[in-house]
Length: 308
Image (cartoon, rainbow, N blue to C red):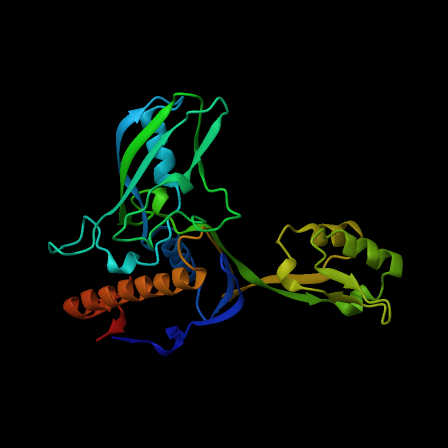
C-alpha cells in the first residue's frame, strides 16, 4: 500500500519526563486523529489485571456484599505479568495463565475499630508478583475496604483476571491521559513597543499562567514558556481592551502534541505507552490487510487515494 507523497508522515516521540507514575512526551509529525487514537488506546485498550469475581463466605460488616465487591474490583493490582496471561475471551490451553486467586479473612476481636485494607489480602502463592499497589511498602496504608467493630467478620475469596478499560473502568491503567496542541506564539514587537512599560506589565499580567514576561533589561515582552498557554484568550481580549488588536498571534501546531500520562501504579508509564503504540500498530496492520484484500481504495470523487 502506498500513500501519495503529500500524505506521508513519520511520527516521532520526544520523551520529556519519566517517573514511576508519570510520563510526559511530545508526539510530532502526525495529526490530531493519530494523537487521539493513541490517547484512547492508552485509556481503554492497554490490558491490566483486576478482581473480577468475589465469593463471600461471611460478611457481617456495615457494607453489603455488592459494595465490597465493587471496591475490590477498583483496587489497583500490579500487572507486570499481564502479557503472560490470557483473558476469558482468548483461546487458551489447560496450562495457560488465566486467573489469580486472593483470599481475605478478618475478624475484629477488640473494642477498637479496625480498618481492613488491601494489605489484608492473602496473595496467590503461584503468582506473588500480582498484588495490590503499595502492598509491600511499609509507608503505604493500602486501599481502605471497610471498618469493623467487635465481632464483625469478613471472609471471602476473589479471582483477578486480565481485561481492558473498554470492558470496565477497573482495568484502566491510568488515572488520566491528556494531550494538548503545541502553541505557536508570535509577538508583534513593533506594536508592542508602542506600549509603556506599565502597559506591558499589565498586559503580561492578564495571563494567569505566566506565559509572557517583561524583560527588565531589554524592556521587551518575551514568551517565557509557550506550553503554559491554555488557549483561554485572556491576552487577546486584553490587547483588544487596550486598543492594540494583533499584539500577539497564537496558533496551534497541527502536527505537534504534548502528552501527559499519569499511571495508577499497575504498570510503569513507559510500558503503558509502548503497549499502546503496539496496539495502534496492530490496528494499522489489520487495516492494511483489509485494504490488501479489497485492492484499491477510492476517495469520494472516484479518484484513487491509496494503491496497492
